[in-house]
Image (cartoon, rainbow over all chains, first blue to last red; front, side, top):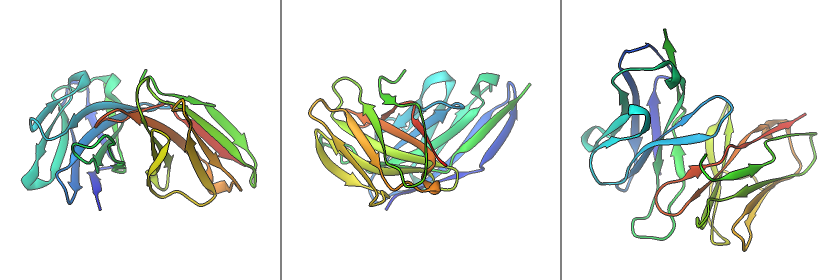
Length: 118
Length: 110
């Protein structure tokens, strides 16, 4: 079984400060990992993904994440927070079957609400 | 815009009723997934279809069912509704390793 733990249900930063949202996963197979963002009253938007290529993954809006197998982590960072980054962020792991034509369900963490102060 | 559409956007109904949620995947995507988002359970996988066939089941209640039609759109049917079924229901579609989510249907059971 797969699981995801997001450390910190709420993170608050000042505008211009570093954003660090933590995600640890558990998976019995090499994982595919994702970060999604959800703005109020909207759906989930893909920020970035790791699918066994480069361990440092760059996404949209200046976000990036690093896959660390030894730490079973996939933390999300952004060097300088903007007010528009305020949202809820979800880390997810997939039970994808590599080489298949169908990719598996996502198991999500509980989410981290990011607040950005002026 | 992810290219995944869901209707209706909001649904308000009473306990014991039945509703149908509709999802149209991105053009060319064969896989459709349904998820439920609630305050107490978070985001939970319900069911997956691939090209009309059920592929995987998650924490889906027996009162819930889904299907995927030949044109690849999918419907999630929720029956004998209870207050606890109030939630945001998302549909996602994928071609390969990435799922793209629709805007969701917010279901309120009164």
